[in-house]
Amino acid sequence: MCQKFHQLFQKKKHGIPIAMVTAYDYPTARIEEEVGIDVILVGDSVGTNVLGYETEREVTMADMLHHLKAVVRGAPESCVMADLPYGAAPDPQTAFENAQTLTRAGARIVKIEGWEERTAVVAALSERGIAVCGHIGYNPQVHGPKGRVFGKEASVALELIRSAQSLERAGAMMLIAEKIPEELGRLISSMLSIPAIGIGSGRYCDGQVLVFHDIVGLAWRTFRHARAYTNIKESTTAALLQFKTDVASGAFPAEEQVSHLSRTVLDEVAGAGKGW
Ligand code: KIV
Image (cartoon, rainbow, N blue to C red):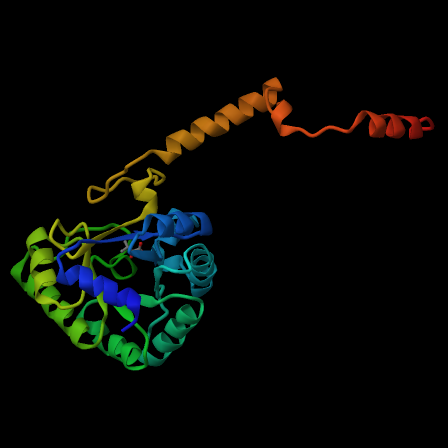
């Protein structure tokens, strides 16, 4: 097992929560690596957060690769995870080829949405040396863009538990549990030996993942499970309005933003321009 995963397993073992955040570009990835985010996820949420798509289903392998490469350039030392986008894993062989494309582009682990039915694909990837993260609970690629909590009924809760165990047995190195009740998040995390990271799944998972845009207040929708720690949308709006005002008034650029010709060069240029 590589050092990055070893560290995550150690955190789980010692009860130290794992912090995971999405990134889709170079500057964000650089900041996330600098602050020591444990896992940087290039999620298919790039579609709705960055590309202006209606749903995650529109995200292609080409989109994923473009953003993954930028993130890897910004965070070369980090554990970067990349999503297999919608339609990229219809069968084990195609899933393997697409997963390999993502790992060759720098992803250390690929994530695949789906419950127990994904066991064969996860097994095929992990048997061929690809680190895989499962993703159970709410799956935007499968359930559509409107999220809801899964597992409130005993039958679905049991299905989620079976799925988590079966994905782990198939060789998954990590698991994301999205929008499941806190009690179930706790139970699944304690049953598995791999790290189970929650989003909207309560306080007792082995770690938490959030979308970068939700953390910094850059999203157009707000979610109960997320917390905005700043409001980039407001500060960016204020900065852009001020720039526009300064250009209109002549306050930008000022002396510190300009360069000058020396007196001699200015005289020479002015002298040469007699015939203009
Ligand atoms: O694509 C994504 O950002 C995700 C997280 C919400 C887990 O899958």
